[in-house]
Image (cartoon, rainbow over all chains, first blue to last red; front, side):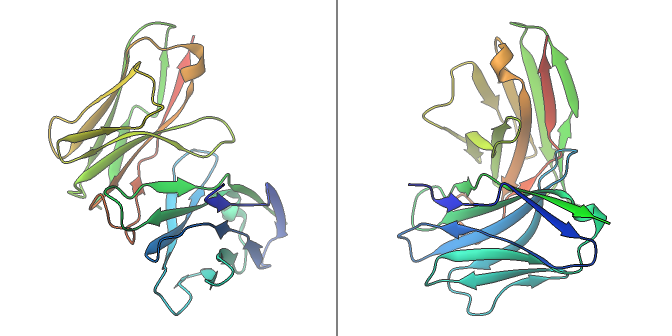
Length: 116
Length: 115
């Protein structure tokens, strides 16, 4: 079974609008962390936001917020007031606790295109 | 700014000619990772070092090797590159091996082409 599922291969959003990128996850661990990364066409992987499994509040970082619904095992990224520079690939990822090595498991990504 | 630096950004090599990619970090993190990312795919973990301890992924081909001479540097060696090894190679670091709440910090990547 996929540990991280991103069902939207591509999304379009108009400049200044908000957009939600979906992510669901699967784990039996109680301790885990969820991460979103942005990858522009130039290739670098930029860390955006983190949500811990025990965090009761949704994480926010500037225009990024994470809509964390633990019972539904979803961790959607919300980008407010989209900008042209937000056009990129977005990856949801998870690190699970309790093991000897906590690897980062990525979803397949969502390509976001911001239009004028 | 503390960061992860990969050199070069672009590397071209010939089929079968050994190539080395380098990564350095100023974050003083204990763990360094190497990922391979092919076009339109998620990054795939090849191996990682926790301090000097090397951890290979089960499906990483023997053609790929790594060295970590000190905390700051880590190298990816491809002994006999094939056409299928053309990809983006990403280096990342994290403070500890088991910290589920720690992000991995990535370099800008090296895009490898095989002629």
